Length: 396
Image 1 (cartoon, rainbow, N blue to C red):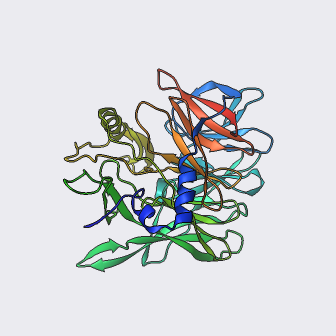
Image 2: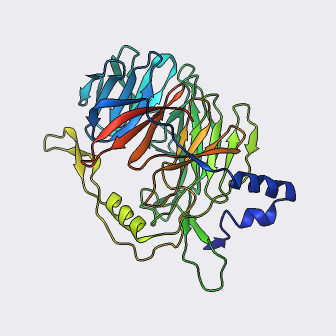
Image 3: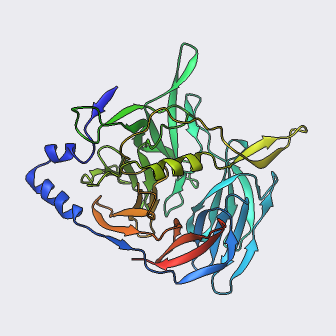
């Protein structure tokens, strides 16, 4: 096991005086509240996972829990269902996210049947399904919510090479980010991301604070409590951004092949509390969507409660961010959801296209980020009955 100093201590020892000055300036950036909502939906939702704003202001909304795809018109409050649940043409079974394509076309990523792509035209007509691109025999393509597209409509997905050891298939320590041009059929690899899990540890006697360990990711296995992995995103111009846990920084792979390493981002680690433990347990025991096969062989979507095992060890501090933390705004800035205390709302570090921290934004309690528009941010407000109401805010 490799033990290293935390992302806040080690970079200060390694960087020069000018870099340390830059970190000090970034450290002084105060969090600002998200501007108040300019619009709130009258329709309630169960669990909004993704929102796509169209050029006419209408919204394509995916309610993941209800397995509903909807068009919402904020001007008239009209809500129109799009398609239906099923396995036929233009139907979806387990949709997990929306991907914006050129010309107001939207792709629905459906996890059923090994991965399918449903296209939604600007008029709201569904076509497909299109099978997700297949990897080579020596690769495993991980179909996750992290499927992205750039402004040209090229798709980006993770590919992990595997090798057979003692009869078992062992994944590599890193994954390639594959780009697929749907028009030409060209496939290439444009970046790589580590699959190492970073687990915060307890502070052992005499050791520096905020120590952590790394270990290989287990394919399909659960992460230890509050562990994290490096994450990635695609900017509109095709730049691939890799957000590293340790040290906390962003590395960019430009579309011309140039690599740009952003500065280390300072952060104050959040200490684990009893309230955070309770929230972690509750989220691990919430029902999740899944595919079930009936006696007739037909698949259907359902909900199941995951099996829960109480952890034997808890960390003292949290990493800078947890899973599914990286979002891309329409201007190409990265919004990285920071680890935060259970008593507060979501907090985001906003990083520009050079990898520099430019602002910190805090959302109100019981509010969750679900998407971006041309000049807007979309959130959901969660009421006491766990119903969600879609909101639009001006960009801060």
